[in-house]
Amino acid sequence: MKLVYVLLDGVGDRPDKSLNWTTPLEAAVTPNLDHLARNSVSGTVQTVGKDIAPESDIAVFSMLGYDFSSGYVGRGAVEAIGSGLTFKTGDLALRGNFATVNSSGEIIDRRAGRDLEEKEASELASFLNSELDLSNDVQVRLKATVGHRCSVVISSSQEVLSANISNTDPAYLRVKGIGVALENVSKMKIHQSEPTDDNDPRSVLAAQLVNKFSQKCLELLPEHPVNKARRKREKSPANAILLRDASDKKVKLESFYDKFHLKMGALVDMPVEIGIAEMTDIQPFPSFPALTDKAGQVQNILQDFDGVYVHIKGPDEPGHDGDAGLKKRIIEDIDDQFFAQLVKLDSAQTLIVVSADHATPCQLRGHSSDPVPVIFSRLGLSDNTARFTEKETSRGSLGLISGIDVMPSAVKYLE
Image 1 (cartoon, rainbow, N blue to C red):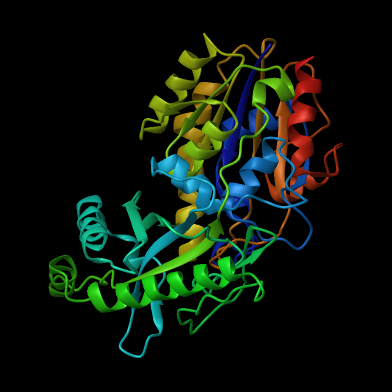
Image 2: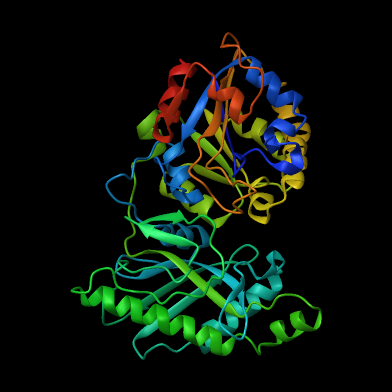
């Protein structure tokens, strides 16, 4: 039997006034997801832990069966690996956002209008790589990735750096290496990075370098031609970089095959997803933009692999933008263009697992700790679940399970 494991990024939500107090999943017309739900056992998932509003990296690791409860390597390393930046233990790797700040230093947009073009971001990154000078023995490597996102590696030829520092991005805390989203954050300013271990000179130096990096970006970026052109077009300038989720170790994880005895492929779009696949020895495949093409890729990969993991970014962004109507329409598109193809797979020979990495409620415009729905669908499975929604799956036979238990459960149903 083959496994198709789909995570819908940020699909979980809360009842919204604009949708007559239903969630986008409840309001959406999803006949194909509903078909899978009627032939499934279901429940809800606390992807990382109670009261933890996780970022996608730690949530995906958890949903793939990797337990980091004793401490996490940090998203910075995952992003660096996934974006192809050279990174070694003792360097400092961080996830970055090109952002917009006003003259008072207040953050107007953490994502620089969410319309930063690849060419613009690449030009800004190349400029900073050539102009940033933090110290004679310090090198900065910055790579623009997708949209407003970037990856940053800071290294010293003389010193080892520590990731025991706080974020400059005020929307996230760093807790045991895990990025935790804060709810209802407003009137934000760039934070000063602080060493979380004042007695460790490596931590003190790392915070100092991060703060120097932030200040240099504030000085260099505003008058770059890219930002002059963006202001002229009445677009938000990318005049700052917010940093979070520091890492200082490159680690080797147990391979997915060794854990679950499944040869797995992955359809991935973002550097963090590529990094997760590479760190777990899952074979990454560049994902086609069109949903119908993604479904075709799934079927092709299944010819040579025991399973395929698919991460679909779509629902997350309207959640961050607070647009419940758009989130509903995106869910309907995914159902019509992607799941319509999956329901044609032989249900006696294929287990389809559908869930999310986290919820992104439109009311919060950010991630939350809310449990997310999960279904395990194949021929012969049923617990009277009728739809793939938060409320419906909460009544399922599985109850509330932990993210790290989803893959072991999938293996059980494969058998």
